[in-house]
Length: 187
Ligand SMILES: [Zn+2]
Image (cartoon, rainbow, N blue to C red):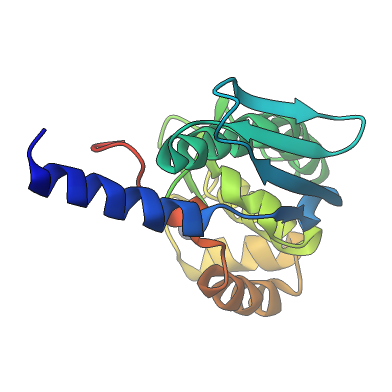
């Protein structure tokens, strides 16, 4: 490794360490976590559900960020598919499949085959905002567009959707940096 590579790596390491949170709030599911980085441990991520505490035992901060993102995805998979099923029942809309990923841009999407993809970061929104996203994607199983008919269907199931949509746009700007950074090229 040349001197330049070393400087770049050290710089990344520093910047990544800045990203690591000390706490994580997941208002969607009313849970809060404390986070501690213990680089000397080299034992990966340890998540204690008894104390809502996450220990990041990674030598490199960027690995810790990456593992934390993976944790958020798994956490979202514990909650969002069941939640979607409940809202589908409420609205009477049917979908084929649900997938939960950590995405940069979108909160959710719905394919023409009826697969609904949800962003793990939804856990960082208030429950009403999450419900709006779920209703929105479920209504796409009926209308694959943003036509007047689509919005009428959304309004039927979530009358305050405009307020939720506005709220989400504001919240998006305030998402913690550790959820936004790409830790692996091409991911
Ligand atoms: Zn849409």
